[in-house]
Length: 101
Length: 208
Image (cartoon, rainbow over all chains, first blue to last red; front, side):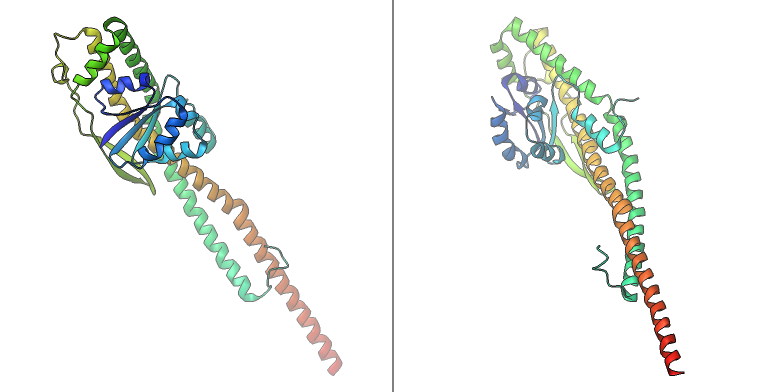
């Protein structure tokens, strides 16, 4: 299975340097919204890498669909530490377990 | 259930008692599932904690190395380097069942490659380009690990929330409501029995 990346030109460059052949350059969040259904239904993609700021501007339902997907597994990265997952832990468990050591 | 809708009969009472037993059994099973999920969650959390920090650091390092390479060697040189790289990361994904929750397991099929196997010549490129490629490849290795761990964590959290909601609904809504119904029917039947005895006594008094 392949690893795919979707994002702006500067975001996909590190992944292209790592040897990724499947990259989708987008300019706006609207482009990402129209591209995502196609990527999520593509069975040849194993991991889909997205930029976290673009993901955070998507609708709650679409984000939930992204996080619950197994094939492909979706991961968002960026320069910010993970806030969304920490909030989910606080909400579900009641304690901020992500922060403590 | 509104009290006016309840039929105060013995069969209804037995049916309600059966439903209480079933609800209590379901409640204890769901509580056990919630505890099991929590144990699995804590295992995954151990791995996940810190991984995000490493991922962000690696991403920033890769971006910095690429920026330096682009500034010194030029954007076209970096772009041509991308076309020269032959090593493509490949993975396979399988499902793993954790307490009824399907989580992904990512197997990395491609091995990490050294300078010689990357697909570009050492003489024609610079150390800055090597660093950019090296940091990007390191980032990919971390992403492959983080993708599995974070998805498992999110899926387990989602299931814990669902089970917690069901446990709370049973504990605070379903079971108390059924117990209330059972008590209403029982009291109503007792009342009917008392009325019956009183009626029989009155009839007996009239006859004698």
